[in-house]
Image 1 (cartoon, rainbow, N blue to C red):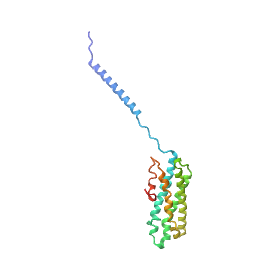
Image 2: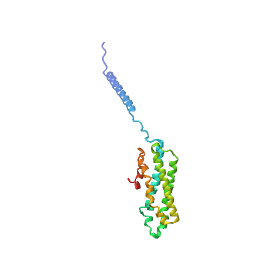
Image 3: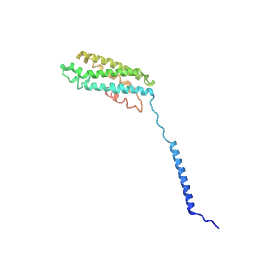
Image 4: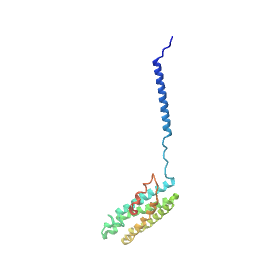
Length: 201
């Protein structure tokens, strides 16, 4: 007796074969995906550079640079802002106290913080000269601020105005070290703003 072929069983076997091929293909695609996954990018700045830039960001940009702008807006030395220079001659003495005492006290404190914090760390080798220039500028700012504050506290208008020519010289000392820094990502925007103002753009 001749055995007849079962068409249903044959169809089932063909379907199972197709399913196995499809599963094998999925496994292969999964393996390929895991091999070609992109690695997490590593930081571009070494720890020393990061610490150095963080000090400049905190003590220079958020401190000195910010308070310099406050001084020029409120006190107005030496450009002639809304404070001291708007006061009548008879009111200059009180205007020094009202508009200039607080900004210059803040500037002095900022400069002291910058100098102390930079002195407490070792700068990156590539920025050793930059570190020295920042410290020199901070010391000059402290000396200048002491002169200004002494005149304000003494109520001496002529002594106060005699300090005006030093303003540009002292703040200009920050321009060269700022121009030398090229930190790269992700901190390339930290020192962008301070290059404006007295240093130009």
